[in-house]
Length: 478
Image (tube, rainbow, N blue to C red; front, side):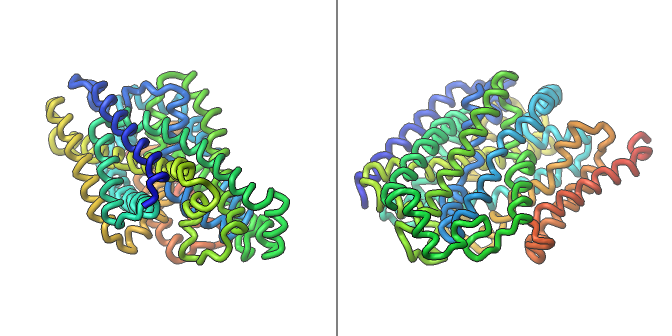
């Protein structure tokens, strides 16, 4: 066990718990409890909004798998990763004021609340809730696995013990503090990511003898490592461009990101978050993936099945132990912030969209409060149990969860805001077609026309939304 490296982690865990306890004192038993617990009272300022979006979007994929892919593929994967720069910009510009105003008018606390009021259909609510629970529950379990394994590599503890530490930390501050605790801790974690990635990138460049020397070594090993096409030349211009749909434009449809566009305080906060968020996402993603690509020179020969460990191994190799502990708090912060957001989102779907809509609509505020606490804790416990012995199914669902949710929700959300003729029949058809087609494309035709499998489902579900809505206009009026 590396005691020096563990000290920063322990300090971060303690600080997160204190934030959760403090945030819990801001919750009331008044009629605003749901608004407070799941949206932080819609009071986020620009900096906190930008950082919570960044921290929620960043995950074990960004800080472990992403650098691992850059290690294997070279600078081509760095270029591909930079398509994520526009994430915050698109979310807040496309949804922005109109989404915030509409959800406030609907008194919507969750994304499904908005869809329920906009389309007046229990089937839209059912499919939306089912999609969120299934896809994100599994994606969350995979994130917990990443958190457990990172603590395991840092502390030398068993995987189960490491997973338990991670689970208890997340459960305490999310269950007690709700969205406000998540947003505030995301601000801290986002800052850690920003500083940690910069420190490690500088250390890697120094260890490699400078950027020119690193580029020369990569070229000597494989000239394709410094091209946009990847080490095996599999990154075509069409595929890299289409990947932008998944991690740029399509992100507006991810429930855990869209809900952030419901929670800001005012227009000034939103505009500030657009600027800060775009810069921070671009900075972090560039740093992390350059670390992975340059790390091939520092630690050559890492096997293909161990590339997820590139970032921790580099930190422990090029930094003093105490500083490595600080830097490794960055991926831990990313995983924790993604998990807490997903946990709260699934909890809000169960409590607000299922329990209050169809089981106990007249529940008192006290019942709602304790139900929210209980459901959040129960979901966390279930995910912990699933993560102890993860199955291939969970990992597979995590890989296509984002694409499936985007294919399902993008047009019901966006067209619901901007096209008055869109109706429940168009929304329902678009969601079903989007989900089914994405699953088929992802499993059987992952590079059809050399495009990412999310592209065609999004295009076709758009056509379905428009055509079905137009064909059912008279039926809607009747």
